[in-house]
Length: 217
Image 1 (cartoon, rainbow, N blue to C red):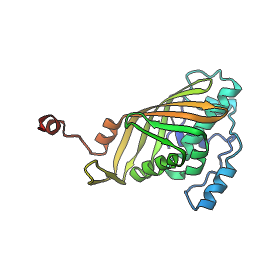
Image 2 (image 1 turned 30 degrees about the vertical axis):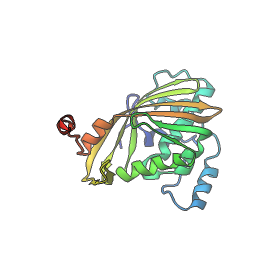
Image 3 (image 1 turned 135 degrees about the vertical axis):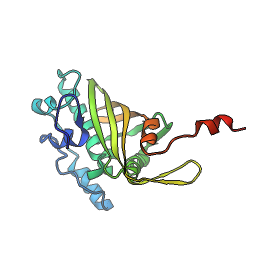
């Protein structure tokens, strides 16, 4: 595990060291529906951040209001439960408002309602140890902007647009990403994610044949 610094911190570490958060007992595995409901109840309390905990994060401005700290804690919890080692889909979905949406901006996909629960398992299916390396965090009221990298080992399977399957061979992935979170009353109303898919696919050994595309009649 990387050492904590103000320049770079993994999402797992960012939250694991925050003892004041109510997510300390997040389940290590996604289990039965009963377990999922229990997970939602166990994480129902609003997470909090202390000054010591905030000092460990790569914030661009450390003078946050209580409201901003509360919003940041919600977002950090979502990163934590998206980690491959302790996936918690129920808590992630429950962090959104009823009309909340997760936009994969580059892929042009929008997820709402129950579909919000599809994103985390999909990423874990590609990279079983997926995690996010948070590099810069900017908090402005109900808006949080984060520069990060999606990292992991490609040990799963990627279904190609043509229907074929690309099997991972343990390639290490480090994809530059920008996330923009918009909260309302302590819940996520909109999450816009910009993933560097070209770099991700290159790391996975999936390179697009541009020549063939240009020459296609």
